[in-house]
Amino acid sequence: MNVGILGSGDVAKALAAGFLKHGHRVVLGTRDAAKLNDWAAQHQEAGTGSFADAAKFGELLVLAVKGTAALEAVKAAGAGNLAGKPVIDATNPIADAAPVNGVLRFFTSLDESLLERLQRAVPEAHFVKAFNSVGNAMMVDPQLKDGKPTMFICGNDNEAKAAVRGICDQFGWETADMGGAEAARAIEPLCMLWCIPGLLHNEWNHAFKLLRRQ
Image (cartoon, rainbow, N blue to C red; front, side, top):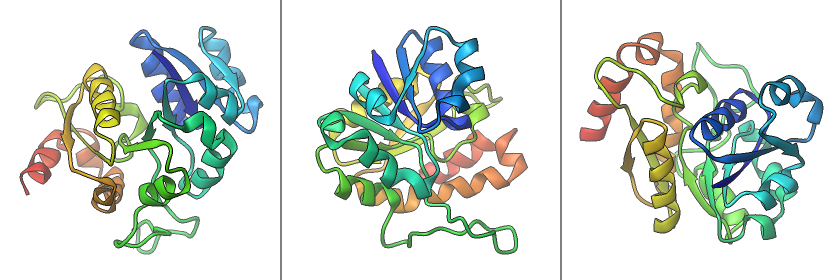
């Protein structure tokens, strides 16, 4: 499958390497090609270009930019290049403001998710929230003592979610479909789990199994 990834940070590079590992073709889109020089030299089978280049190339797209830049990135990619395609939304609405007593601050509320904003901005695209609640080191082929961890996803298009479930399965995850875009209001705050070291290592799978039962 041709995969276009919008982003050049650690999440974008980790997922790009995972897609390459599992036999997909990848183009990363970025505003600053220099950010990808070292990565591209190590992954010469991948392509790089602008956000629009990556979006045009991909049959499936990944949005992996800073949350505050997400809307700008999809606009730069072009609505026509996103139309009709599954778009894995790995972003979180983390504000630029400093944490308060160690707690991250969001620029959205519990009545609106970033995924919903993105879906309204580009209604022709099929956004699916996924990979936002796990650190980049565990995104592909995680090895945990309790077996496969669970990836929570949501979105309005069932075919797009089926495509994302297939990717999650390839990458070593079970998938829990939490429903429509509104469910991102609950999924996005799960990124807070990154801040708990025990969950990032030995207890991640157990925590997700408990959450899934609620």
